[in-house]
Length: 251
Image (cartoon, rainbow, N blue to C red):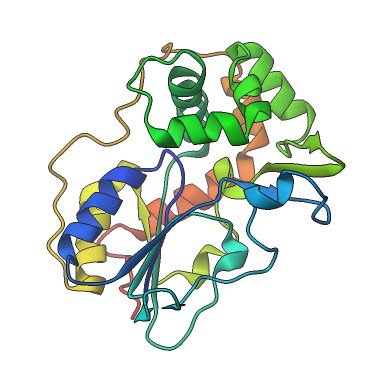
């Protein structure tokens, strides 16, 4: 099974479109699980919002009686479970840049409504009004709230605690488990390695992460750079590994 563990605001839509275009005849299953529970399932509405804890990626669709060839989407790393023949990949982006992109994209679409409102936007607003309210904060208040809780955003509802999955803002745990780790800022080289691993011909033919405009020097860059220091170091390591003399094509 091909598994694309996609991160929000890291060329997710571009790469998904390209991947599915290359494997049109394969059966693909999409996930969108941006939130997770941190308590036991409470009664009320919360149980319909979350997958059962510990559930792994589906490999056989019992409704369609088909083997899943490709899994992709937004989900926590705990859903990953490698089996023989799997090809796992992800793309990462500079953590501070992705943080601001996530905020301005969320505010633009969920709060200001500056785009056509699709069903996904409506569903997100209905399911996670607490996160929408957080995106409604100005950038200074948003950064301060994020840093004050150590990046671990939590909401309480109906006796349960939930919040964004770690991958909303942080790099996935254990990047060495992936067969290929691409870097958005080195897209051409990353696609060369992805194509070598999958036997595809994906090309970088359009702008990725074309989100709403944002200030050239937004609030909190220095504080966020210190906060994300470990993730930034890991990001730089993987960007260095992509250099032709050092890149390894793992099979």
